[in-house]
Image 1: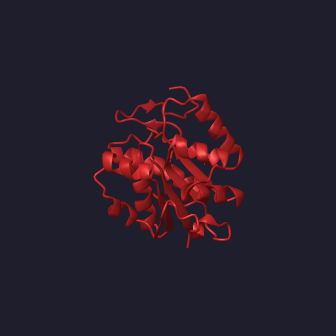
Image 2: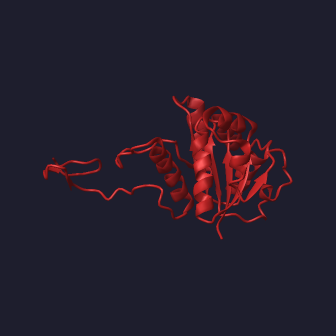
Image 3: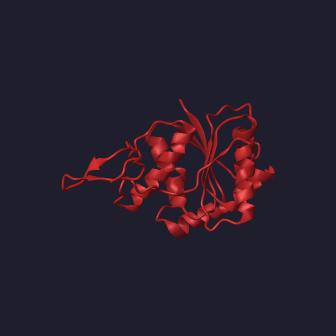
Length: 205
């Protein structure tokens, strides 16, 4: 069974973390959840989910201050960690190795054990501090995956946009899923039967 640590921090976009937990549960992935205090407030402000609804999606829930938790040790084997969404504060903590809570410690462990760490960062515009922190964690082996949904799949709902971002994040962990429509490339026939150019095509219209 795949075992994944999931961190939800206080950036806007709490629905990304919730949807990731839903998808991972449907896929039978064992999830170890850590939620920051700011994330709980963001969940309350941005969604209709209650705290109990969110933590109920995880296999195991860990207190933010429980630095003696199993996921705080590299000897506890996991298949990686997903921080979704990842605030700039959390990014800074990971980049500096300032592991003063369990989410940061679990991320630090993931990096030092050479496991896959995916950070779904959510902020705009980006300052030079943000960019340099992203460069630091990337050099350390993490994957920085901004919450930037694609539009080639012609999303019809907000849920489509959320699933596309979550699907990309799961791709980076190596988890099979059906959350997003994959680009198959090339020219396609439009509704009039004519040939039209689509994003990614190297051929003229």
